[in-house]
Length: 109
Image (cartoon, rainbow, N blue to C red; front, side, top):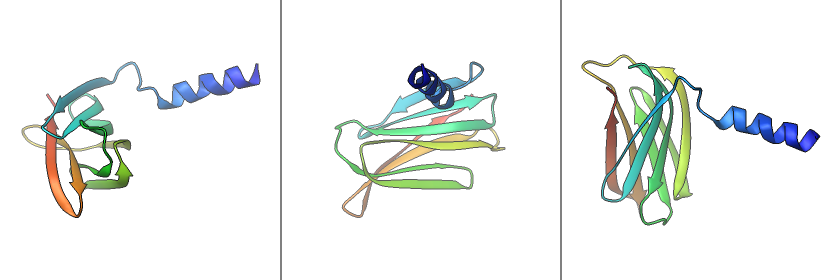
């Protein structure tokens, strides 16, 4: 029973709230997805390589910058509000061998 409760709690922590919307798009080498609320509140950014090979994944929105080396998928937890006009761009990037391979953005409505 304890394991079941612990697993249930884990799902609640990692799942987006019911009011969150998700928007995603893919570029040539990466896909970027974001969970957001309203127009300005970004919950997280997930960056995934399309070929499944690792690299340094980056996420950026407003003044937030994050990176994770040697992975093919990573969820960056943001949980912040960003004011941008006309609309915020939530972006991800892929670096390999010290070179920027691609930056790709999702525009929030």
